[in-house]
Length: 187
Image (cartoon, rainbow, N blue to C red; front, side, top):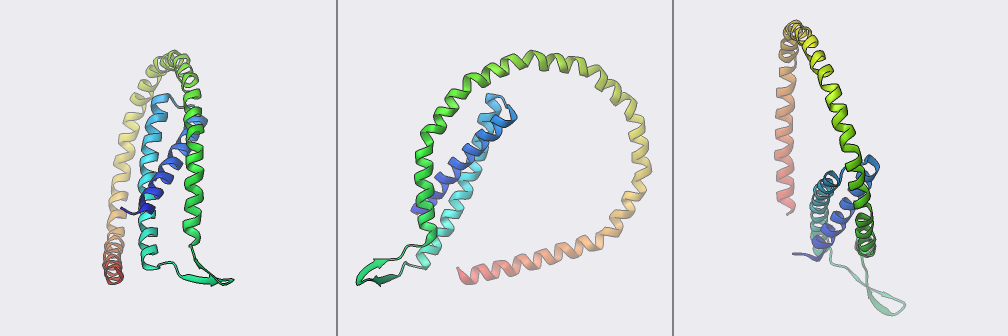
């Protein structure tokens, strides 16, 4: 695999983890929620970075860097994207220990906050449960009546929208086929 794919995946994954840790910290998530969010976002951003790295790698292969003479010296030119990725890679590698340290420092505090909040949340759920059940019982007949009143209007709206939806789906299919032909032609 290309070097750019790995770089993109590493940068994307690190960015996703850092952003998700920041979000979790701001939202006061539990450790489990924070770790799950970090894993999901890190994986998604790593995949996105890998795809972008693949695109850059393919573009670089197509457009091999030109060799220019500058002040009598032969110097290969590097695209700005390569330079930016190098800088981002160095920044991600420099930030990795600090992010890990911040996670380790925050973990006991987050776990303590979870332990402190758990009884209060459980009490709030116990207090709210009868009220929510009563509200559901009161609302159920009204919702059923609203559904019955709205059903003919919804069916009418669906029938009115059907030709437009069919037309939009046909247009999207044609556009996708055209796009596929264009991509296959340039591959």
